Image (cartoon, rainbow, N blue to C red; front, side, top):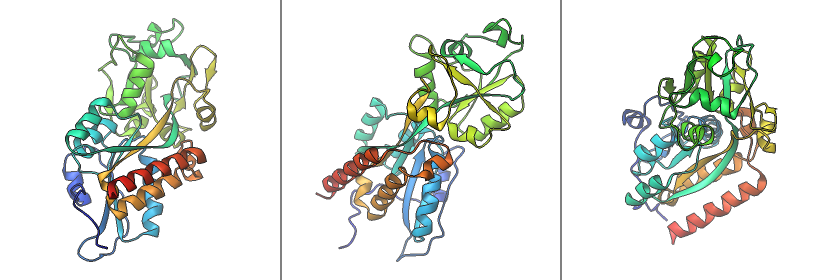
Length: 322
């Protein structure tokens, strides 16, 4: 049977995707052979936190399926939803927080129905320069005072015995799901995330910023700390029950609070009518339950979550093909 493309979102080349305005984009393309008149294609945008997972999975997938191109772009969770996924330009959107109600509505307005899959667990990590020997643990309230608008300006504003030196702060951009999660979980309602910090979707830029200043602090997904444990220092978090360091173990156990969080990918239900997209999503879900995820710095999903994801995928496929 010929493939039904009537409900498929527009396809574009990796070059065209990057030119569409995905700032800081990074792509992976397999060694493709021409199949008929065009290569088979899967387009992915979204979270820089989830990027290492999908990058590794795409590499494995395209080695097994060399006629498929998988294009991946770091746009931030929100930037991916609003600029690419909901308008029907991508098949998948990675996210480090759940899709928001207004994004669901935007998708609906464009005829895109998101299907949610959990693909891992992250220990969102606060990092400082290794020379910052005065700090090994902060309370959630202290973290709030550092990162809220009109908050602390110097380390000594937070604790008297800390240096009387101004913070140099590096963090996620406002289109990022990490920004949303950190703002909601740490800063909370009634206050805003401060704006006078170096904001970026390029997590390795945060790494370099913290490496270069003794009085720096930043935050991002655990995978980017796990790449650099000797050149940046992770800070333990005390949520009222003692200091807990970020790790795969504490994230899995649920003791690293409140910064443990699930990671997601969302598939366009309409795209699941495409055999290539459907096959890649199934492969993605299955690989999310393996050591491939822990190898890049996150907690794999359980077999139970994998099976729930696969059931949800099959239900969506049956619906779209019906």
